[in-house]
Amino acid sequence: MIAGSRFCVAVLMLSCLAACGQDDTAANAAANAPLSIPTARVVPGTLPVFFSVPGSIVSDDRIDLSSRVVGFIQRLDVREGHKVSKGELLVQIDPADINEAIRQGQAGVVAARNDLEDAERDVEKYGKLAVEGYAPAETLRKAKVRRDIARSSLSRAEAALASANAQRNYASIASPVDGVVVARYRNPGEMATTGQAILTLESRQHLVLRVFIPERQMSRIGQGMEVGARVDALPQGLIGTVSRVVPSGDPATRRYQVDIALPADQPLLPGMFGRAEFPLGQVSALLVPKSAVIRRGGLDGVFVVDQTGAARFRWLRLGREWQEQVEVVDGLSANEWIVVQADDRLHDGLSIAENADG
Image (cartoon, rainbow, N blue to C red; front, side):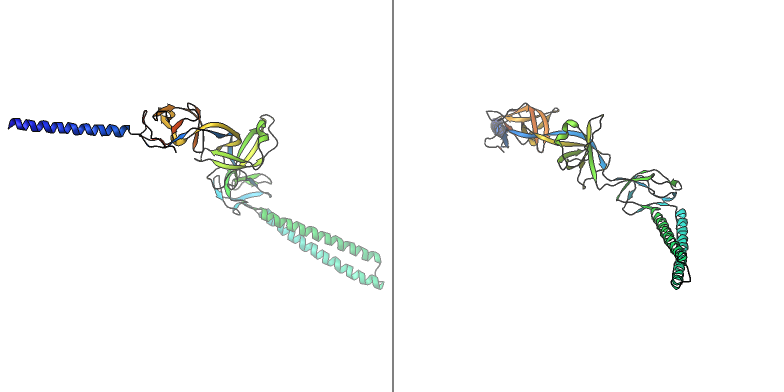
């Protein structure tokens, strides 16, 4: 019985070893089976060439608000950073002096009108008497001169009153645009003087990227030209249009101001750093898809399919990125085949299935 049991155990062990051997063989066969994954032949392409220059986002509508009348500031509630709307009252100047000028103007108009009415009555009276021979012609002439002088005095008085009324309108300063207060130079109670800025506003509706171009590049740039723009605060690039070229350069730097209008639907703020990329043409280059690039140990490379159909990892020196492609500066030749889709199953020596090019 003991011998029979030993025989059964031995048979079972042999069966298990055979099964394990079959599993290992199947696993090895599966591991070495050709991997079906997209590949592509590397062919030369074209890469655009840009001239890049740094700049800053600025508001094309920057306004200094000042007073046209002299007086004490009664109201000034906004400070730096406050958003304001078009037509919103920002500054109120004390109108006491203006109101007094209006009262004097009204009184002057009344006096001039009364004087004119009296002069017209004299002309009418002396005109009748002169016709009847009871008044000399000289008296009538002087009456007419006095009437004309009274008319001129009334015109001056009415003009003075209109000017005083206009000054009352200037005592209230409203925002001419929707924007933001970026500077405040006066406080309530201080004197506002003619032409001296009280507030500075910036509109966010017309933002431009302002750059300064060296003179050697000016011949390539014209108004209406489409320009790529990159702003550090935005993850994506923008397309702008050259809106202004100032044809007068700084004699010290030999650079010329160029403004690039940017899309209005972007979260841009004045003062942000940006970079304009002016197109200069195209050059020939080897390009590979970004999806093919694998980073190992801080370096970039791709899997190249050799003549035997095996994948071999190769380090590359890469250049610029353009859309979904990357420029290969060194490490790859035209007409070589590469794996275009990075895959965790890839390793050196792995066989790549034929007819898998993408």
